[in-house]
Length: 209
Image 1 (cartoon, rainbow, N blue to C red):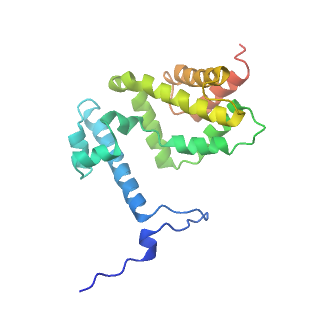
Image 2 (image 1 turned 30 degrees about the vertical axis):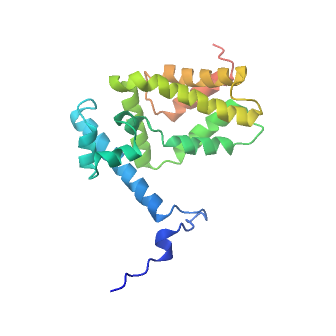
Image 3 (image 1 turned 135 degrees about the vertical axis):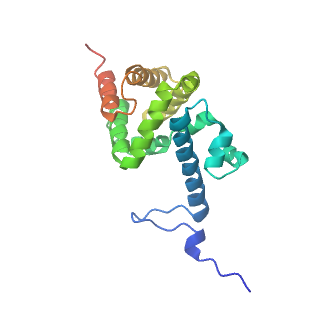
């Protein structure tokens, strides 16, 4: 018996309700697998602790092989550290009016990015941020994440200002923003958008007390 024809909409992206291209079937399957891995991993972290949870246990709970796990995440740490808000924040930042300062653009982009999350997404990101801030095994790799974030912000500020990412003032701004956010949020709700906006506003004011 000949195979049934595959409908075009199952293999090619189509427009969503906003008229944008929708990811194709393969991309949607990959995203579902990735989401399942993270969901099951966080469930196990809560049930038995981060340190006691192995990649093999996560893979088994997600009904995949360990080798498939590593195709999505290079390590157990990255299940927590991978920041899905980055591409959203980057686009929101780039969409800000050119007359805004870089810090004001970041403040608005931050608030808009959080507002775009549905309750489940917001809860997951808050949970993820709490793990990053409180799990000792993750704090050891947090310095590398901070370096990555400084580089990312420097790239965006350079793009906006017409300077280079290595520019002295560009690096100083990026470092000040990441350092101030870490200093404030590590002892507070690590996913409080109003606190992040307050940090940015304080920096832009010249940090006058």
